Image (cartoon, rainbow, N blue to C red; front, side, top):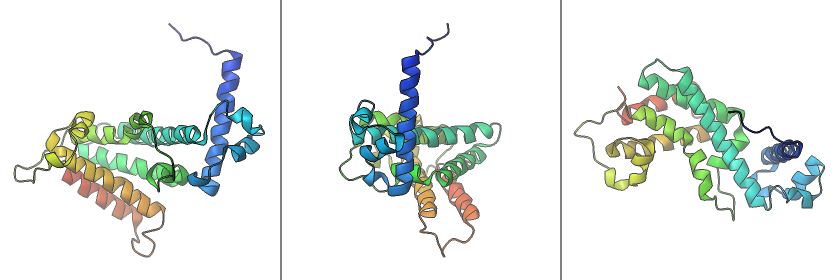
Length: 222
């Protein structure tokens, strides 16, 4: 059965919400998340600020919407990269996902900075951001289930919350390696994106693939 057709009022609200988010994304790129202003967004959209509050009652709610949107976007990029590499080895799919995340970040640096850059002073992300935030991890975790640690590898199970292994559906002994790989992925992308590799790493793609391969080995991918 087909879903209900949105009413004209619902379509208008959706269009206005998207216009507000688009203006907020522009602000992110121009002034950063800490300086995001509902009044400035309202001016950009051509609305009075009181009207914007009917869509987003506070700056924090607008920030949350932008954060979820960014997490979902990078998650979709990771999932698309994984699906495009279907039929290849686990290691090749792992590297493809890493490349997908890097490509998305390079195309959307302000959104990447919002979710993986400096925290916004005074803002605490609500728990409903967690499902979107975990999408990349879920994709990598699905691949990591094909990995195997050697018996002599150090057991760091107690160092990581059991929720990690449960959430990713992996062997608890792989959880620490998975968290380390997650840190390497977003740290390496961030270092490149924000200029820390300038005059240090000359061939960024080769270096990035090398880090991805090392991370693949850390979770035991053959």
